[in-house]
Length: 168
Image 1 (cartoon, one colour):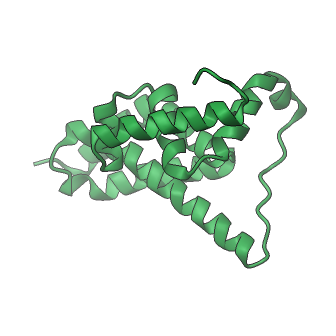
Image 2 (tube, rainbow, N blue to C red):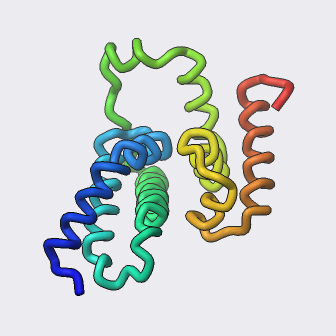
């Protein structure tokens, strides 16, 4: 039987190992570092609450990824509702230093990525940024590997069109 301290230690170890990658994932999806940090922190807090009920602790990283994606989607839905009700979401202005670090090409790709439907965004980010396999993406999103492949193909083609590229 595991004690509460064991759960805290195990989740803390997962935090040290996966926090940075999960934060990058959330920032790419949300374009807001502050909100992304909250999303990731909430995902770890949720994991800690669910730890006693978690059957396969080797799948905790996948649970966290799924949680970050779902919480990011919730944030994006809140923004959409706010826009529809007349409230505008304004992401925090990036500092001059942060803008200098981002190349023009990278900014163009990120802007085009944000114009894709949410599922396509997530599949591309998980595949090319998080470097997950199709099976891992399928498990994270609760879809089939075939759906992952077809979604990634369509998303890459649409991204290429948005960027004015011909060979996507």
